[in-house]
Length: 157
Image 1 (cartoon, rainbow, N blue to C red):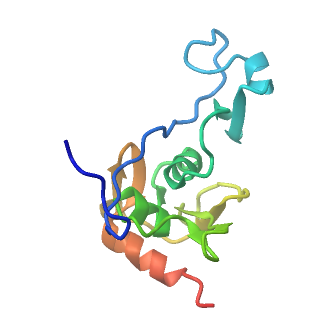
Image 2: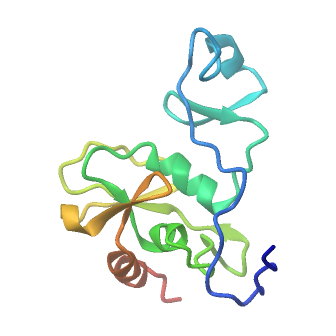
């Protein structure tokens, strides 16, 4: 059995309880029925996608997965969010002493048709296929590109 990590450990383990959003399922087996999706038992994450209401929306990895579901081919999570998916503990998606959530940066390229929504930050830079890797089922930029984008878009004040 492994011991828990120290709170200053720069590496974080993948959290338990991250749930991938699902669309409405008329049978109710693989997702909510239309009626269930309108009820209190499910929460809308983005257009047409839902997670059970008990899912922790403040967990950084959950926020990342929910926003990543909106990506089209050739897009990837980048910046602080990709660093977190790669296991960097200090990229928790918060600023102002842990009081304010930072939007999830989505690298979507200049031609992708993704609408900006609350909780995302669209980065319209070109990503080459070599800069995209899949981490725990989420398309992310490589660690060097993610770090570069995190530094480039970090607030200075």
